[in-house]
Length: 292
Image 1 (cartoon, rainbow, N blue to C red):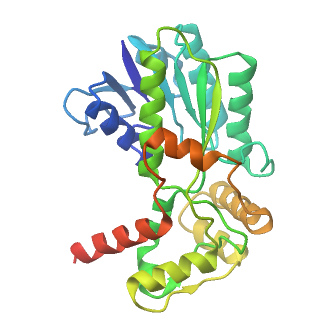
Image 2 (tube, rainbow, N blue to C red):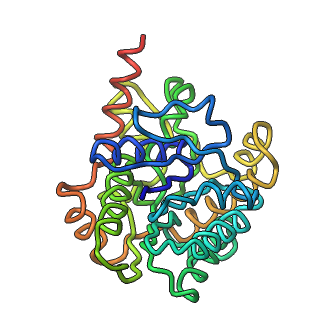
């Protein structure tokens, strides 16, 4: 029997597939276009769409462990609940679900509340699952290369801070959780694990670190959410731009703080301290230099 990885071509999913292969696991990778997908040798690319019930029933055959990661989408809750219910019908009792930090608290942010609805379903259906709640990805900031090289950190994180987490640490913990469940003789109890970084990063702190590493002034672009939404809506659906705006508003008004003990739990699961934002910035800047 195999592990089915959804979201297999994304930032986290691809690292999870690679990590499982490195641990000699049998992996099925869900993708809309298996012919176009590129996975390590031995990975079975499986055609599927989470709102296509027939394709998901087929994808879940021969699977005893599920990694459920679905991207932020207008029908995200439908995708997740259909997949969970089909997995339950298929007798799958080893599940890792990818949620978000503060899913239960940021009730006005659509994708946070959507993920919490799925968490509630897991609890009410008594599904044996690990629920992972990652914070904001450090790697999101690598996409701001042009602005940073022009001396601006543009993400309006605010002044209270977010415990950004490195996607490599996330993927390591996903792999460990999947294998722990798969290799257990019986289904393990449900658990919730928060995934955070060691530093709570504000907009000004992020700008200061980039300035130090790039050896030139980098200013924080400020907390203007109107400007952020307009800019994002020019490149993405308006619902998505507004959803992210609402998330950033909560960052600015409330901040995000790790729950007590979260870092100790992560360190124990990783076998090393979670990577810092400064480490991430140094490595990212070095990769930009190497690509010149």
